[in-house]
Image 1 (cartoon, each protein chain N blue to C red):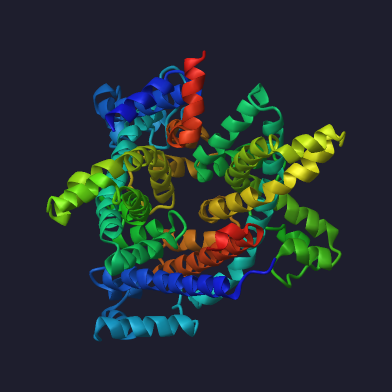
Image 2: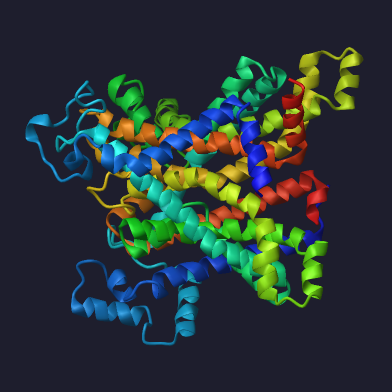
Length: 293
Length: 340
């Protein structure tokens, strides 16, 4: 796996589109991690202030993204918003992996009736269009950051279960797995020590690129009023907060939305590159281009 | 080429299974997940008697499999509960909202297909040029934008600021009254044409253009990308090269011989993007006050109208499954290798 990651990075450095995506994604992670410590107006960012004289101020040097109906500085709110989007992205994808990978692994390795039942269960969840199941779950669980993450992850895991299932099916008949079986190792050890590590690379790559979609869908939930609660500066919620006053103050909705676009675009540009990388035929052309330059 | 009976039966069986799955999952979400479903079902301002009645109606005193039986039976009979917000049966509300959503989505997909295929062809013919890169970036951008944000910005720019297009609803109500327009099918474009009512037709079109454009962006990008990939492959095929060496005009070769191969990827991309588009339609309808399923669901979400939310979720999931089946059947019809 390490060698593949290394190859990925070497190729990426030659590809402008991938580099732009990579920089955007790194910026998102860095800002998400350090944002609480670089705020110039932390009270505004966390949403506890109400400054009548500063309501609906247009973008300026003092307030690059303007201010909202409570006179809060939008720049600080958007910056802190990166943290919540990051928490959601990592939380959703992580939880979905924890649910999906074992199910796909067990279904793929054991096959038979158990495998069929598990994959049928996965199919049932895949019958919902994206976000719809999360909407139903979030409406039931109630608002809040944790509930939004749970709702999204519960609608997300089937994709990983499928992916792992397919991977495991190609790996499980490899000679080294047979060898492990002949040595008398128990199924659990074979599954987790021998099959899983060799089936995981595409799943991990896919999952890290899916974080962009997680940001997008979480923003959608918040926009519909069933995601994160105010005054949390989550980007989707910020867009929705500026909706009613769009004619007075377009900047309240505009800049948080722009933050979503840049972040998701970063992940999608990387994904575009990774798709070519994962396709062996295309990878050869990429390598060749590099060598013969 | 006709599809085999065995294949059709297999797919039909799969559809029934998936529908059953959708109902089981919604049953779990409504009856098992909440700590006290009767509280959710009776509404936020219910009295103790109403909660008690909801408990009886939901058969919460019975074993879980009996509850499931009642749930499925109610669903089959069209008893999907009564909306708290509108005080009307959920199924009626959904069915009357359905044509508005369908008309919007079909219109959006039409724009997406025509423009997407054209962009894809242009990109393939000018491969690795500036034009190609711009189209590629555009299609990635289309997949990266939150549709609700784009809708809001378009609304602000084209309706509220420039005043070019109307900002809400499907048609101008005063125009409806003055011209005596009356909906028949619920598809206003068709209805107004059938009645020869051109002022209303134009007005409906003007109302539809912004929401449909916003919705079309994602499927447009996807079909452009798929068309491009396919065209790049096909243009190197021997049959295209020989057609060109025979002196058949390049335009004819590209748009007649090569383009035929674009049918499959375009259908695939439309199928793939249908799920995103229908969810996108929810947000777009909410912003443009478009009286479809999405507005119905969004309003229900805002007022936590529980029966209505679940009804909308079920109908959309069913619709999605049927569309997926149709796309697969068309695919299998075009490409017999997929029938295995």
